[in-house]
Image 1 (cartoon, one colour):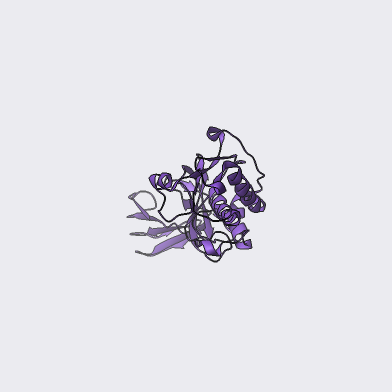
Image 2 (cartoon, helix red, strand yellow):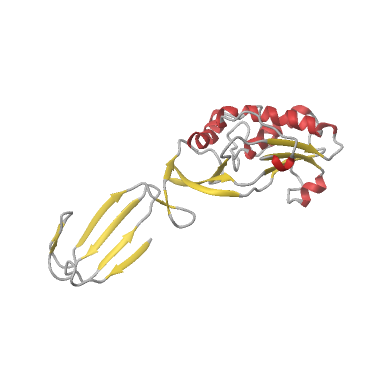
Length: 256
């Protein structure tokens, strides 16, 4: 809320004008003019007594952006995450796979197969096809088979099977759903995904891990325990995202 007080006895013969700007998720400007002294009439309203309050109400698509400037609000169709932000890739992300562990289930070739399957499952939400490179420096998403010690050294929990490391992002907009604001950001740097050796006992288990982590790598932040894939509990992960999970991420790629 911003208060601007302007004194101008010549203009409109007002003792003071108080401007109050109120910002809701729906965006509302409210102007209060406090009259002191003579009567005042305008083309917008007529108020005629001392101490009377004139209120002008304007509804506008306006929110306060992260940098303090005005930003256009984007109305979302749903929100199925336990956090208040979502990310996206501006263009087709390119994936790269590598592995430095002896786990036979985590060779670079097997990681590629797991992640291809996971990426395909999210395809209808993002509109992306599979794009790959053998050069890690050229990748937008780098999936790496690592040791437990390496994962812990990079900040991953001792009990994790896999992780998507924090990536640099750029603020884009505010999304509004059901009276709440959500931050929309785009990836501004490579996304690193770690698969941790000796965590799973079969290819089918790694495929479940992959579809979950690829969801994060595509921008699905947080978890949705009512979903099929983005639940935080491994035993509840299924082979493909639910309609709610598709819609949650898909609405961002549809708009941006």
